[in-house]
Amino acid sequence: MAKFRKKGKGALPAVSTASLPDIVFLLLIFFIVSSTMRETDLKVRYQTPFGTEIKKLEKKSLVSYIHIGRPADQKLGTAPRIQLNDAFATPDKIREFIASERQNMSEADRNKMSVSLKADGEIDMGIITDVKQELRKASALKVNYSTRKGTQKLIFENLR
Amino acid sequence: MRRNTNARINAGSMADIAFLMLIFFIISTTLDTDQGLLRKLPPDAEAEPTNSKKRNTLLVLINSNNELFIGDKKSDISQLRQAAKIFIENPHNLPDLPEKEFRDVPMFGQACLTPYHVISLQNDCGTKYAAYVAVQNELTAAYNELREKASLKYFNLHYESLDEEKKSAINTIFPLRISEANPVEIAIK
Image 1 (cartoon, chains in turn orange, purple):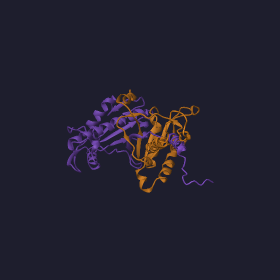
Image 2 (spheres, rainbow over the protein chains, first blue to last red):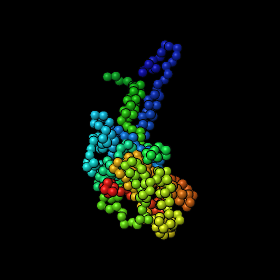
Image 3 (cartoon, chains in turn blue, purple):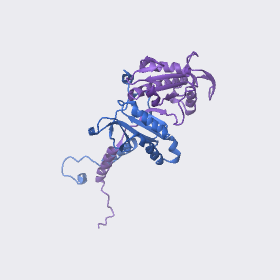
Image 4 (cartoon, each protein chain N blue to C red):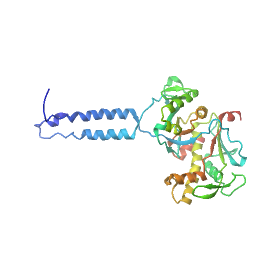
């Protein structure tokens, strides 16, 4: 690294790497600004359905996530499961989860809380409605059905 | 210990340190921003709106075979957007579409609206989630198109570029009224 500092005997001077830290720091700052911390380890696999009328969620700190999909670990079978934080859960655990998420927010933000349902498009509505009913009981009424941007053709195929 | 007034910190390792931090950030963060369809669930205590008249309700049902029914009639999803738009707006004041009423709207004064309309979205426990989201998406599209049309008509601007006050005025004219029914009731039917 410090080679360039020595007065080399070679004919060609080494390329200066003095600006390398600056370049890397720039990259670093870009990543810090544009990304968010990965909060949970995903234990379920899911591919959210397609949509065209989608909106971006504004404040990440106000959003809690509920992941629903088939277990990533093949040994656990293929029945859809709910994941809250880092572990599988049953629908009746949702109220507890919402309460603890509320605890972590500042008082002013609590009523702005929203829940994002990140669910696999191929699973049945049964489990989703269970989750929705629990969310109503926990009075977490702002819900986001997480979707990917897709074309109309991809969306319509689900009903044919 | 060396006492050198011209001592300099060796900046050569700075790049290594920065690379380490960079790699840490790349691994521990995600880039994807969450996006989707925003909905407000009805409060728990509140019963489903059963008091509304038949003309005010559009029943949209998806059965367990992912077939779509608009008001008891089997239809294709491509027709849903148009059907929902006509239902929400009732442009010709037809008697079998939602009641129209004059209401005070901020920035517009009196306007003829359909304040009681409800799109009742029902699904079976076996409906595919993607199909449900597809229908939600089409209904949102219907509202968005109506709002866009009104925005162009009254403000000569796109809905997305309006300020909050104007947006909420347009939202008063076309309020999002989608009722997501209780699943238990469907299971009995």
